[in-house]
Length: 167
Image (tube, rainbow, N blue to C red; front, side, top):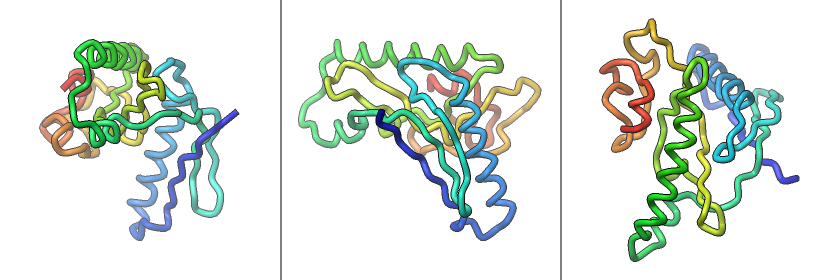
């Protein structure tokens, strides 16, 4: 069976605190994904470290990103197609938000949505900044997101929650 390896090299991090933060975030991504099972998510089967590099072993997701598809097109997708994809994305977000504790994806954007080769199914990839919701916190500890897609709370204005993913 085809697998994909996601690699994180810590050699780019000179600051030991940044290096540890990156390792913790990578391990959190592995833990989050290892416990999930949904058609619109890649399944993570293992994670390991070797020579200052950290790896996730996951399902290979065939297709191309929605961003790549948008860049090639000269016309809009059909309304029916967009509504079908939106329905699938809402379903996977509902699945994530229904976990205990809820998982907040925090990085919904065209490059993290893979459309199957037949154009019928979408899969959500890259849980690098996903986190579990912590009701006792007033704001996110790490401020990150993609400009144009991330809600204000991901930039220090509060704590991200399920509404942040919908934003």
